[in-house]
Length: 299
Image (cartoon, rainbow, N blue to C red; front, side, top):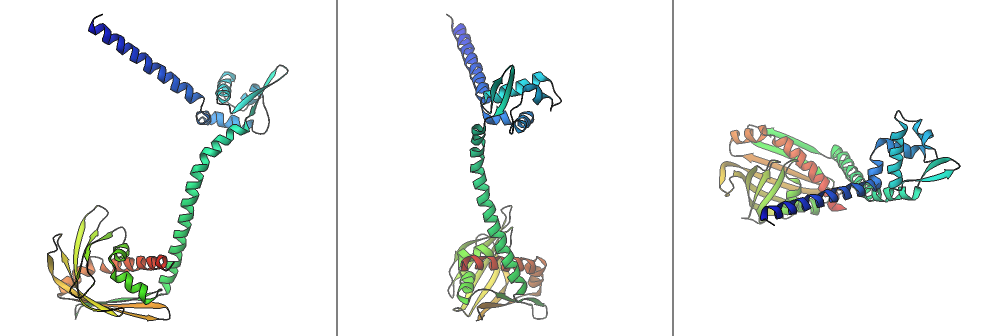
């Protein structure tokens, strides 16, 4: 036998094998209960015979189709063991196999549990947001700009103790969870919270664009006050002057903590650029995110 004949024989054999496999797959699909209920007519038939057995003619009366088409659907349902036949005299009655339907319920149950878990998580999240919004609406917040001395002043009250609020403002892992207003996120490259130390971090957009900032700690009085010198920077940590001096003061009263921030800019142009770029809106959202984080940390 020549090579070409052998090749043709091999190809023919492979084609036959593939063809037989496809037929086998189709047969297996026909025996699958999910194939049976995929058709709306078959689902309607199942609904009809769920309460009482019915003959093919009685079933066909409910559909605008031929008796032959209904018989074909009944044949598939029978193959899939969703219905069974019962002979009464000359008539054949079809009735639902309840136990087989339980297989469908069992398959759906796994997804039901997944979504119940997700809905419970959503309920918890909405509850947290509701509590946070309610707290935020009653907590002190003030934002003012003074162009004459190039300063921005922010006062914000938090429904949490001083220790927790101080930690949220001075720990890189926590700062990254709230500082960037959504959908932006914050990525801290390095942070050494000590006098002479620094925090070098980026604000990352949803598209992955990074805007870097350099923050140097110039003074620290634990749980009372810390000061920083802030500038924009490039990815190599080279500062973009002019910058601004931040003075943050912390105080606690009756279980709530007030943070007072004074930002003095080295130039009016820098302050105007900061305000026009949405600093107030971004800071407001970030502080609301801090409210949410504090709730989870207290829990």
